[in-house]
Image (cartoon, rainbow, N blue to C red; front, side, top):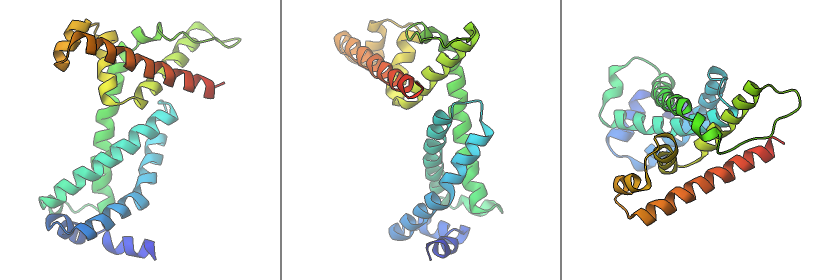
Length: 205
């Protein structure tokens, strides 16, 4: 029954009417259908398409991108822009989600190039037979996964301090807080990152 209801709701005319006219109950039903029908499909597509990334990281990024994509879709529908396309609801939604995911991964790739500086702060244990490059690649993947689990604010502070090598004074000015508060925030961000790295290490054995 639920599938039939979603099939009835997920068409351009119904969606545009609901979002454009602020039909709250109908809008909530449509958004619920987006998640039940399409979220797992988008995450699965992302895992297959971007296999070079750790599975947990791409699942996290794809799930967040799907949520942002739904918001973009809703904004476009409320402005009546969906009528400009002959594509299906799924195609339009995935277009928004994919663009957001690509932007996220591009940002992560830029961060990854600078991320080598962080590896020295989180030395890992080598398994028997692993080469130096294999150890570095494995460590890099763990740090990237841990960073992905942090909030955007925490990642920004870590990037400023350890990747761009800004001083505590500079970070305090950027955040409009005291140097003491900035120092405390930097410390707490690194503690959270260390805890995440440790948790991932434990899960990986």
